[in-house]
Image (cartoon, rainbow, N blue to C red; front, side, top):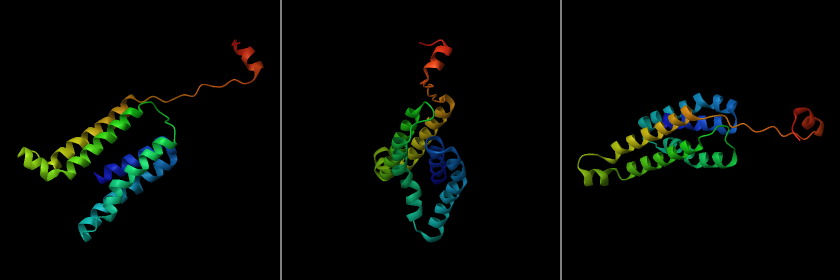
Length: 149
């Protein structure tokens, strides 16, 4: 999931901030996601992995608040965020969910919720349309020649 979250973070930067920056950051951020998992495995140190998991949760709302959308469909990003939050809740209550159900664990449900978040983003990419800004005509001569008055 760490690799996917870093890729989603880079895509959000590409979509909202600057497409070049997002494109440049995609592979390094994905590599950081992989490295965070390897570091966890090698040293039992979860700090980088925690940063990979939670920094985008703090930065993405700021990006979405500070930078206007270039495409329609922001609702799909919000749905993905809700499913991600649900996945984190399932992860946190893993044992309690398994104790209550006896069949499914919170870990299993976490992956279902994460898949639903990915599905919301897939739907976003299928449905999005560029947001066009209408041209503002300030020259009266241009208004007369275009037939608008």
